[in-house]
Image 1 (tube, helix red, strand yellow):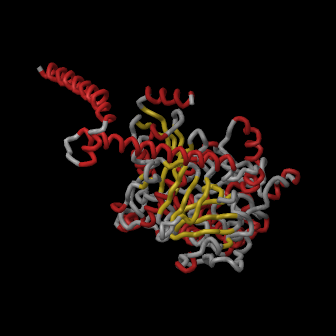
Image 2: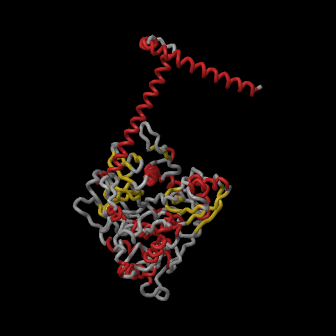
Image 3: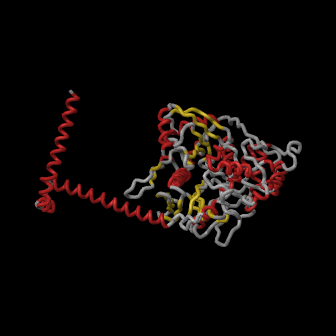
Length: 567
């Protein structure tokens, strides 16, 4: 608290702040902003620097001192949103994934979306079976190093690059084979477009996972995609609600509610902290407005409140998806030059993260490392109680599930992989002093991003592999259920206190109203009866009349002061 107070005092003394924004190609853009500059000013600066016109899909993300992720709100002051001392560090990321990224108007926009999805692939947020993984990685190679050249690319050249959290020699050989034989002659633009077409058909395309727990205390990941609201649990997509089926999102403390067509709570989850729950709610409100509405004029301020308590209020500011696509169609300019960052097989933090493949990890250390995610994604399995999943065959377009297929999402689930969906497998937490040694060791084992600021961006905030096997295992080992007895008692006490406060407030308002009516000139039978009682006469002469004279005296005194000032 003291450090935050001091940092706020320091910021108030400064007129300008230094701000560094890490871009999608891992370069940095540093600028100086005024103390009262709003988020829109910084965002416009970055887009101008990148020569980006289709900018509505992007946003600026930062992490506060409590390791909580946030999207920078463009309508508010930057300094008031940041809870740390300057200089400020943020990241440019895709905030709203295009439903059909391969058909974006400008090549430069497709390139930045390509960089984001490539990042999702590496960090374990985008899952796919091995055949699709090999094709995606081969497209990345073709886009960034060009055609296969035996003189430049010796045997095993693909093993020098790490496209996924971990992968095997078999997958590396398959990547090389596709790059050598199937993609010869493709330009970077063509390879990126094919990569986007392939990625958009995957179940976890556009997923920015929020770790939560269900009512039974089981870990789950909640996400908002271009097609609707998704819940991933274990190795299955257990819930999917299209945007036209979802009516309202609400949160209270750490509890997150999802309402469907009939305004009934159909899903309830629990976030790790109230701040995380609020961030989840705001992300949901923004995604719902962006993908569901026809016009930005239809956007309304959304409240998480009930009848008597104000709660949090939030309003999406910006154009919706349909308006963005209509505006993009009007763009008429010469395609801007794109400076692509080629693959460099080193640990110097290039555009794609590098590191040793899994087989190079010492055997004693390898036991503490998860089996490769990609190894376990050999096929999409459909159980007897599974909903149909999207086909991932090359070139096929995504077709949303019909209403009849999505009506009973709680009982019908889609299998998306053979292993539990756990994006934390490839993610390191935001570095802190007591974990600095484990952090350095884990970074060398993983070939994880070498920038500390990249970790802070938010691929942060999940447990280290060296400490716990995976996110689900850590959550279960703690024995910590979302609805523990203590929390249940606290919620009950809080509800009783709220009911008591509401009752007292209503009684106070009714009492004031009764006093006003009885002291008025209204001639009503029950008011006459009240005025004739001894209790009312005592209240009138001993309390009301002196109080009225006191107010009248104060008003005359204030009026006299105003008259004297006027003269």
